[in-house]
Length: 105
Image (cartoon, rainbow, N blue to C red; front, side):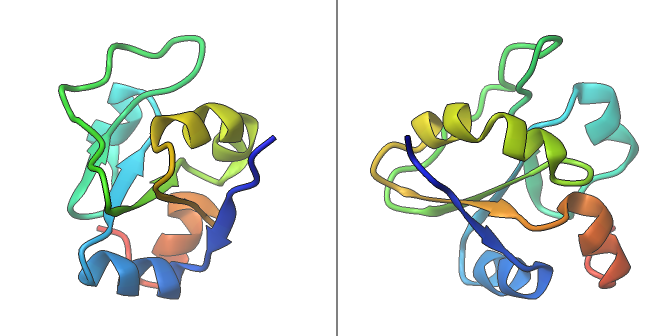
């Protein structure tokens, strides 16, 4: 079992500024309503659509998030397989916490 580390919103924003990719695992409608700037969509879950044509990059930090962090925790093992051997992280508290810190758009 792979354990993914969590990043605080401050650390996630810094890594994003350094080139990390922010990936939203929610559904399309949720992503369209509100998302973290410069993030992309890769839906997971029972009602997931096909990923939106993105290829998760090799040799790049990828930070996965949802609304509150609960879905990321639920799908952590699946997320870990999306970026094998890469640097995958979960955003602590999800988009809600990012917004409370003044980082969401």
